[in-house]
Length: 447
Image (cartoon, rainbow, N blue to C red):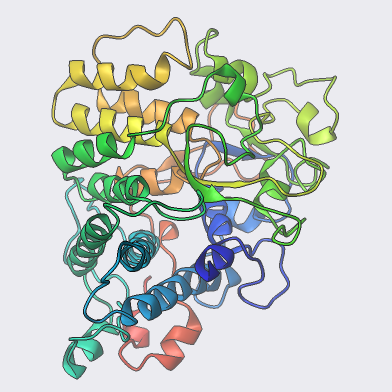
């Protein structure tokens, strides 16, 4: 429960900054580095939008580092309580969730602090990544612990992530969670599917994503209009159920993303819009175009200023109490992983069948019988807009961004072109880590 609370807390760096709200601020800050979100005004997350927030002495890299290494430390404590493994289903459930949290944390860290693919699209396995901190785990020698504190390779991290998630799945097989705040077997499989997609293990990604969908359904048009703020939505697999004691008001995801809530976005300080070119790629029969975004003319009848702007999102709502729930995973993402993995195996007809599970609920005119991986990636950009996937997809697919096109709706001065492999995509290791970790020196720093 402490880990779930930490993931939804704010002020991890003690700087009292409203762009620091743990897990969701990592997802949002990286989303701002894509071309899919256009900022209407420079405010919180503006430096992320401008690719100017990655240096070793900046708050953003500290938020990233502290968020995930705290999750790892707490997961280590839980695993360390059971050196022989759990003897009951409940104990195994705790251990499984801890392994899943640690695997998830390393999954994000390896991407934030290194390019996992080379310019030719192959895996960048020998590149230096991040420390692996397993001090609570029995069986490690002092030499192994010392080596793990340095910059392990991408291959090392991949091996560790795969091992952690395999143990998570094994331990969670019989565990029944008490709420969607917790990680279930299906959620662990979903994290595993994300990792297999990153590591280009297509058959395994397909299998894990398909298994993760069990027991969940794709939301209908009514669910699409619920404001993405209710964890009870049938498509939601994992999230955080906010209440009046846990909500963080203006220092929160909804304050930044919801054009309807009375936060920074809704008041118009930093309303985040859908990129005009991405919007144009939705068909006129796509319900997401109708329910989730304004068109080029805006919405003069909207209750808040932010929600009235052209291309403003209607996807994220407001419940009036700042208790809108956080979404971490849903079945639609798993369908997209399954479809992309099939397409990467040149099973394009099967990929279309898989993708139809989602598209039949999104666009009644969609009837493709064969899809490419790029077709699926486009649907990922639309379906998962604002949920924290854009940056990580760009990096794993070795793609840059081009906001500088005719008719773009990006903030003046921020219609940037940033190619793949540019150093701007990768964060520098925080100064505090360089100072306190004797196994990392200035020579190990990212460019």
